Length: 91
Image 1 (cartoon, rainbow, N blue to C red):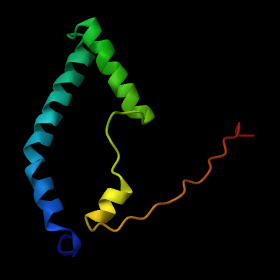
Image 2: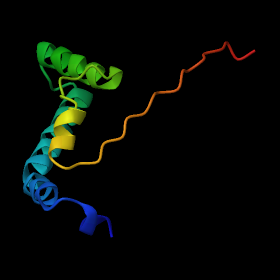
Image 3: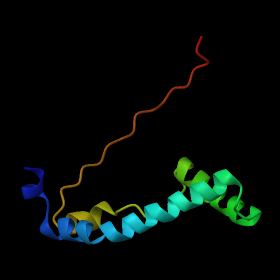
């Protein structure tokens, strides 16, 4: 049912990206193995570690889609307010 409601251009573009995503996963796997086994140059390991930390913290260079552009292309866009998180010391 979801496929019938998804724009064809989105499905086709996603399908076309599968080989690139598989290649990216292969590179990520090699990087993980190289890092874990200590076979990576120190400067490369440091750079990779910085990129991983940026991804973890949400500071990646991946652009977020613009809701206005998505609406222009016929996508229904809903925006939500994130709930405030209250941290306590557990006591």
